[in-house]
Length: 200
Image (cartoon, one colour):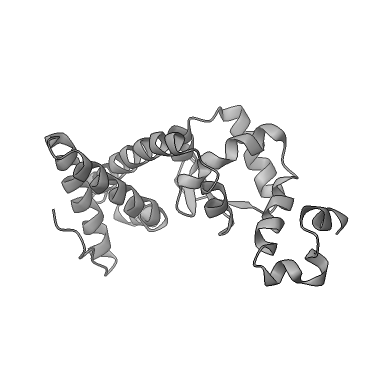
């Protein structure tokens, strides 16, 4: 309680809640339980949409695996992440506390965010292609994964479309965006959804 008051005077009297600051203070308080190296690496996680399979997370952020292992353990211990093991999957999904990623995203440097977003959409484009190819062979398993990855796939598609729009002379960028949209649309239709806003 003393630490909370030091971070935000008036927290215990409700003034912070009235200023809609108590959530940020609570997150900061939880993050202070992590080691300095873990805290320094965390903003990169802000590019994800709620969760990520661990190998995708490491590929996109390029975090040192040993550093990530420590950070993951500390995040779980602080109640800021949980692990979900999927039978048959080599890596677990990391589910983040719903308030954590937006908070971390706000601390990302603009240049770093662009670099991460580029790797993000390329990784999820490749993943969408893999899911598309594997769906006919093992649809139950693939769709279990796609259901979890759908928020990241849709965000990756948005980034791919934005990239194609920003580079109109780049035929490869346009082809990638169109193919990405086709893959995502197929799974949305499989789940009874449609991505009607795509017009390329």
